[in-house]
Amino acid sequence: MTEQSPPSRTVSPADTKASLSEPETIGQVLRKSAASTQPLTSTPGWALRLTLTHLPNMLSDGNKTRTLGETPPEIREQVRKVVMGDAPWPLVMLGAVGAGKTCTALCMLDRVAKSRRYYTAQQFVDDARDADMGRLMRGDYLESIREFWKKWRNYGITCVDEIGSRSSREKVSDHHYEAVKRSIDERHGKPCIWISNLTLQQIAQVYDDRIASRLSEGTHITFTGADRRLKKGTA
Image (cartoon, rainbow, N blue to C red; front, side, top):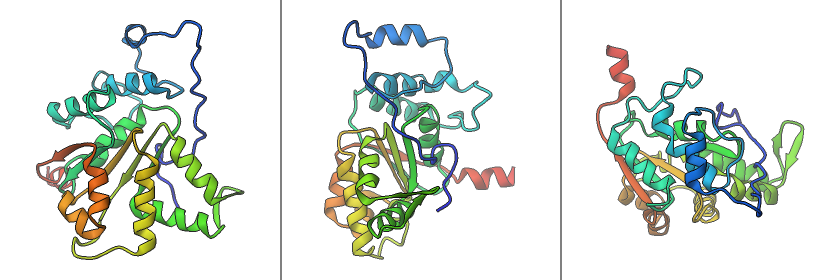
């Protein structure tokens, strides 16, 4: 599988153990980092909140290829609430093709220096199948199914794109269904983003009510508007 870069690269989860002697409050960390645009190198809970909370302030960083410049302020505010713990994970992004869902998610992953993972749903299902069959290669290393799921649980933040990308009338295979269901269950209560062009009702048709119900536990953001790619192409 050809992985996307940078958020799709395989990275080892960072050591997130914090000092127990004099832990910093989130307020102290925010004040110390307010002038910095550099992503943190580890992702304990407060670091992830800090990195993503400062997303709108980092748009002028010339080293970033993706920005939230075209993302409506109300969507940025919803994202802020999730990463600050004021709204529940998972973050579910729904809406039409080209409305900015993937761009917004990748902007979030860009700001987490380590322990992040991006997949399309089909790529995830393929890797899960290959790991189960003992043929998932990571460079020269053969990754077992146990290691595959352990990594998935331990990433600081994950994103699965193109959920239910098939026709809303076409059911997925049993393997596809089980892999997606487990991927949601293993990330329960952890930072994760799920993206689909379908509504939750259509996702229930492609998978079933159990998948839709699990996704409905989180925060939903619906993206609207014309396809940005088409707009750029005709500009």
